[in-house]
Length: 493
Image (cartoon, rainbow, N blue to C red; front, side):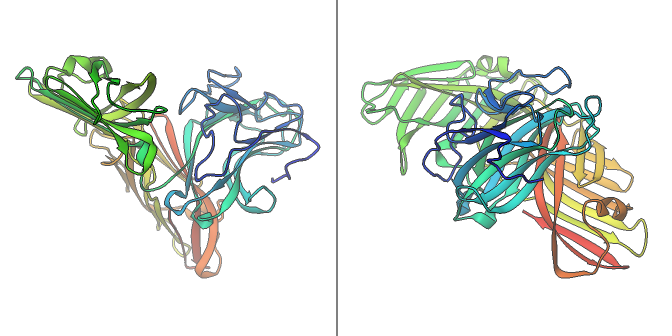
């Protein structure tokens, strides 16, 4: 249900938005409030729309709100004295180079044991004309069905293609629709709202490489490249820079060229090309015994899994009194009593998802799905024995992976391989064959009909769950069908 905002049933809090940019203002709510957003709550909500540091749990389900980027998040009770809506909205310019919307969310609800719900609540993304008004697109994120209990949706990163609006300024609205009055407690968080493209902005770049020699002492090396904000009035000559990576700490006095050295260790601070607001810091350490500086973070003399193992390494740079803290996810591969190597980098999250679902209306058991998507995984996850779940609309497949990232159930199979560019992502390739899918997918709108090319768009959610993290693609598949014969759904985006 889409209910016009500004209804008398809403209590509105209007906060002055920042100047339009090709990125969300305060997308992770790090100001501690809704600066940059238009925030509207219900007059009598179950829990007020607010900015929180996390740890919130309403005691009725397993979900606990925790930030996914920075220290804050937005949180709502997703219930109240309805009918009414809860909304966070912002005008944003959609660049062609970064037209994929991504955001993190999670929650839970109980409309089964409380109240007498008959209508579903819906969390959706609504794209409207600049300033609000005409609805250009509506993307359903999750439906809290009446009479159901959801303990925990799982921490989900949702992906939506906004390339149809590239070059335009639109209002992006996160909308929680509550169609009834107090029909069961709920909670929903939102964080890390961003636009991404194939290339990561230069100001977000970071890379790390470490080599450890377990045989010969004083033969290790560490390389770090990271971007930090330029301090006001910064001049390098005579400034001190402190760099910490893991437990490795180095301090240098800079010269006029932004260079510093201490025996075999060097640092260089230089302007980021075309960006006066940021500096690139390059640290090089060699000829040392550095493994002990990273043992506390998981790197050690042991045998890793075949594809390596992932660990989070903290990074800190202090320059001219200003400190920049971050973390890098690194892939570590080691051979006992020989050597180890860790590699980490920041890279774009934008990756194409592909789907071909073919349905045979003439012969049962002859349907198939070919799917390539992407999974997120927490640091330290080992694939061996891990459960991976793929949802294509109402069709679900569950696999148990071996150490190489392969899973097989009957005629269905899946392979998982770590992305070479971004260690936080896994490429997931699934094949489903000899299946009966037509009846299930008809509930999602892929109905038997005469729909010649170019077909019609049908909204369909694609989800991959691995290690407790969910990656959800809000897709419009193209459906082409011939009654009594076959149908084909395709998506690439």
